[in-house]
Length: 209
Image (cartoon, rainbow, N blue to C red):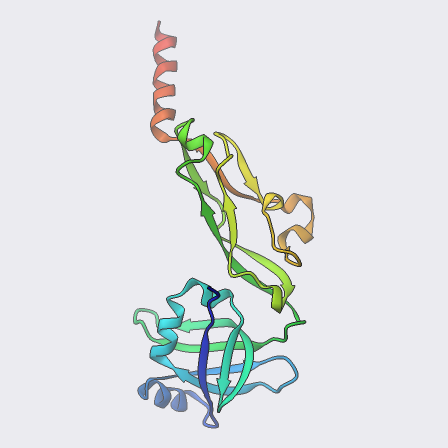
């Protein structure tokens, strides 16, 4: 079942630090929505609602429905400013998008079948994650919630690189557009520490013998 997020917002006219503090005392967060064919618009959103939304990984890489004074607009989350040590959110930025707009967004990687990967189950190796998210470029309607990385056939000492990822149709990796030398490793299976230490011990013993 597809996840959807509704962000309830109100337009605001009061600006400045004093106005922002008053909003926060009322349980609201100052924010702005910009981009598309509309002008940048200062808004406020509900603190508790945003805290709940931000607990969902998908909220950061999803097309959101921002309802401002009863009018719905499609947008993506561009920035969140949090309090240094409290749970409070200080400010949020939303960017309007249309289905045909090309956007760049960071989406998370979901790693599957780590426990049964060849290098783990048969080789006794350990999975090492080099990346946990990637930046993609696509039309807004094609934005994936996440990209799955299947480790089933990954052997000991092997890696999966950016170019090996299976992307949805219409989705490209921004990093790869910079050239072949940007084909970064995403995940690998390496020898476990115990196995490495055991190998070193055997080498020392053999040298002494």
